[in-house]
Image (cartoon, rainbow, N blue to C red; front, side, top):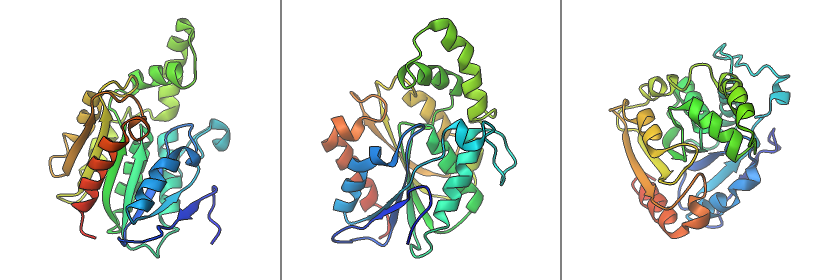
Amino acid sequence: MIYPDEGELFKAQQRKSDHLVFFVHFFQGHKKALRRHVELVNELGYDAYVFNLKDDLKDHFFVPYSHISKKYGMKHALADQIEEHLNLLPEYKTKIMFAFSNVAGAAIEAMARRQSHDMVALVCDSGPGIAVLKSSFQLLEHQMKVTFLPLKLALTPAVWLNWSPSRHLDIPKDLETFPKGFPILSIRGWKDPMISPQDIDQIFEPAYQLNWRKLALPEAGHLNGLKDFPHEYREGLVDFLQSLPQ
């Protein structure tokens, strides 16, 4: 089957689980950036699916808007796209969402909308965080390489508003719709300059009904856990996956 947005299905050589690991890459990233993650879950016996997000303003004619939720913002527009791809894979009756950075908030939104029993777990790496204004400022510096302080200060509100005017206050409410005991693994680096562990905690802690755990990497930064700390990352992920009904 040919999937839109350069979607690809990577099948494990020795499949050990019926769950599909559904990957959603980070903002302004690419599916190729998840090669290590795909190889890891394939090695563990899981099929994996990846695709490219339409995360450039040009992809939305400079007006990112969700035609499903009727909300303005890239986060909500990406939730539409994520939902579309989830619905393309009916042959997999159960799926594990694996999302990165603040885009994990869009993945959570798509899951909350669908209210489908095919989602059995969620893994979030380096996000999402509640402090959108702060992470927008850091995004300009660390990812977009805007170093001139007055320009960063001027652009930060635009980045935040084009991402989501709700400032991620909707994410804890989306999580409240998840079933009681829904398993979540939150991976975070203590030295993350963009989204702090404390900002991530404020997303998940209000949803008291969740069965969520943390994988803390004390020396890791933003999104570099598997690359720079493969043993700790793999060990924590394997422990979480093995706790799920297969």
